[in-house]
Image (cartoon, rainbow, N blue to C red; front, top):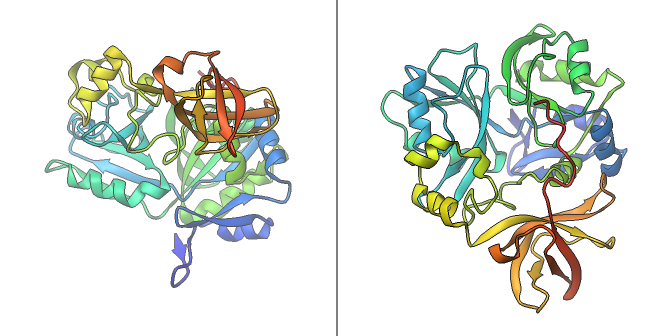
Length: 377
């Protein structure tokens, strides 16, 4: 990873490729990232839904958690997150959250148990904006014998969409038998890479951790396939919103618990019973009695979107929540949003008003996701 002098944003190993493709670059979490290419966000969104979109997500944090054996390393990580990692099988990955002592979410992350690393190694991927704080938090809470090793010489590519598997197979990647949340080492174009069948668009696809020096070669090879086009952060956001997926710092943060955020599916039974993670008392109380508020989807009959920060009101005018993500859903051809409302107003079909520039915009609570997931189960 490189950076210019002064206050210039960091560059991923693919920065020059984005500029050459005519991308509009923006500063995001301290990185210069492509928000869209000349085709535009709507076209990029649609292409990913129908074919295969290629994303540069090298700004994300990649690290190994290293211990003497899996039981020791997993137990150490379980003191920081609510997911069950002791049971995580080799070649599998889980989604979880770093929790504060009050059960608020410090960040969300992916945890993999790679098959090409020593038994006590776990592979972590965290959000770019939280990376430094995450690393410091994790390192400060590890027992003797377990350490964190950030990987600063890796890039991360995401190939997403219904044709992603065929594209990968055409490159010689043995991915056809992989299921959602499988991970595996493989050789692509002579480079040793780590591939997971996952992503954050709601579509089938893969995330590829590749040595930074080989990232451009892999990027060019993937784009040489007519089924693949480059996709920026703008379409990534609209895709994940239609997929009902949380964006850290917006839909989840230190003020929200995993249960309020609708993420209870990511906390396995043993952890619910045993606890042993930060905020366990709050999480288990909310699992038992229900949280005071819940993250919901919001659908609208008109064409006007509601944006983050808009207040949500009951039909009697009382404010009962707030929008955390919102915009126009290109696939559903209608405005969509997510937000938090008091639990009494969280049932699907509940009629509400979202206040846009002081005017009530009729809305109703909708099931998530807005677009069915294309994951290969």
